[in-house]
Amino acid sequence: MAIGSITVELLVGFIALLILTKALGKTQITQITPFDFISSLVLGELVGNAIYDKDVNIQSILYAVLLWGVLIYVVEWITQKFRGTRNILEGNPSIVIHKGKINRDQLKKSKLDINQLKNLLRQKDVFSLREVEFAILETNGSISVLKKSEYLQPTKQDFNLKKEQGYLSVDIISDGKVDLENLKDAGFNEIWIDKILKEHKIDDPKDVLILEWKEDEGVFLQKMDKKNKQKKSR
Image (cartoon, rainbow, N blue to C red; front, side, top):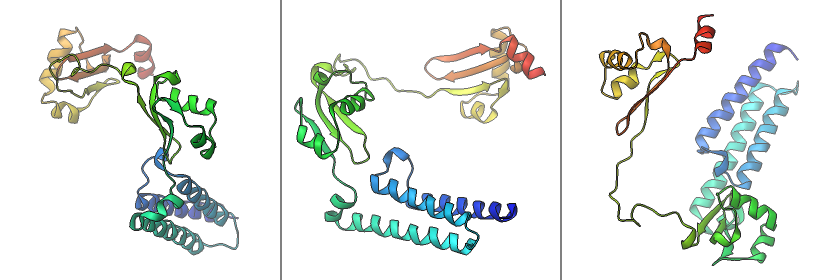
């Protein structure tokens, strides 16, 4: 096949898949169900085969993507409209640990063994089954955990401590470059930068690796290493 033809078909297939993904509203791979995963594989296979088949043109690629997208959309519409179909098409969460006890029947139904369960728990920072009060295996394969009260981390409310507002840090200088938009959003100007640099005995923003501002903690600044400066000058 001609390079130009492959290039055009790849671009068309890529754009079509991108538009379809956005239209279906899939934002994270961890959110998809097994049905969504299979649908994505089939859709990619359709486009892949179409691109390298000499007898297939761009119209065929677009038609295949559109038809499969419509089928997926119809299935999702059905699951939203008719609750009874969700069990079949999306599945149900399974309570694999109930009141501290492992439910072996649910593990078998979910095709999950003890080692796999412990693996999932470790991903939630749970390193012992004794810590778990409830564990729910979600339809996307992830696990949600509610620890026993004695293993929960204490909160400020437990100690009757005053609540404090949280603040986001803002990068004012990154890798020697001033972010003017962030500087403005933080309520400062270039005069403020000059003042901060003078306080740290720095003459040029290019000598700063990172300058971070946080409302409740102020400035965090790290100078550029000599090695980094030499590389940038080259």
